Image (cartoon, rainbow, N blue to C red; front, side, top):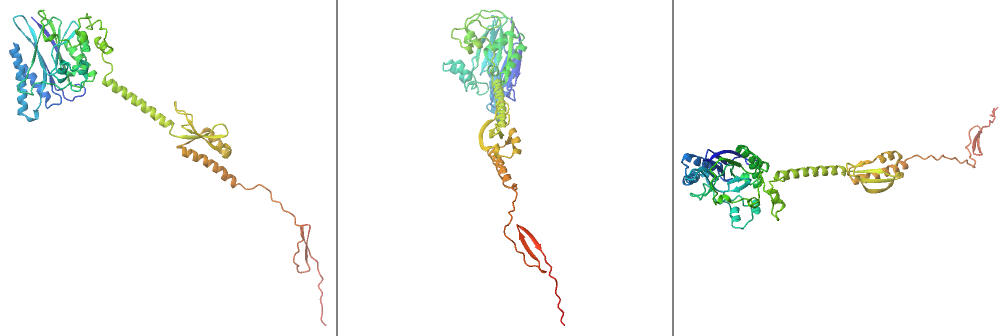
Length: 446
């Protein structure tokens, strides 16, 4: 007898406006479908796939009936795309797990198509059950590409199989022996693209309730960027017939560090390390989450841009003017900057003028001692030239203070005769007028 308990979560993510994923959890059937992003009506294809498999219901008593239900989903999606041109090209990935009974006891059968995945978590070790049907995954299986290169390959999202694109499609089937305490994880690539295997294992080992664990994984994917829709189904095995392990594809390890036969701590983190283990591999093995994500880098760039902008503005303000100032009581200097400086930007000596304080009016000296701000070097030179011109012009128009001297004349000045016998004589530079009266003579004719 096998007893299961499940939880599920699905989220649109942080960059998409429509959730094209669909999930299903029943007492024995669990499904995650991921509508093909960028294709027409991916959400419709995912919903049709889940609905068709769910409709099989109690008829799912064998691998054949389970496979037939998925084939029916493929046919329904394909026919809908033919009937409605607006749905042409729609498709979906699918990973499904079903608990099937048998003469030797219950067993879990997992089927998948595309790059949605199934994992088993047992005793701290996370094992990938399914194989991705993608171009990059096939290159890895052929040895043409390394696992780390595949994680950043530009074509890692190009899938080679999906429901609804062809009239018939091949589906992979995996038989998964169960033990009490096992956890089965079904998820879309929105989770595995953002959260690495070690962090998934750490979450599964620390969050006990399946619903809480599903919510936790979705939150982690969003925290790392949430670039795609995220869907998670977690199935806990509460009771199981502990049958001997069988050599099936279900035992393919997803991580070389985890797959090695090293002891596993109770927290799910492997102990020990290979001699050639690098820094990045060690962090992953220990389950240390990524601290430098796209969002962190974007924030750092933003802060750096704001700081640089503030520095550039202060520098522009501090060095946008010139000022004229007397320094040693004699010289007149032009500085580039502002009097006293601004923060750490001190004014710089631009030039020492040939004009000195002796060439300007005394009334201008006090102002020069404090500094006269000008908008440009040309304006500063012009200001000094105007001071010198002012001094010269003031000196040129000032009245003379030299007294006038009158030199006495040594030559006599003759005045014209005046009536009445008046005579004028000048002696020693002084002019005098002498008048003599001549008695009038009257003659009387006889």
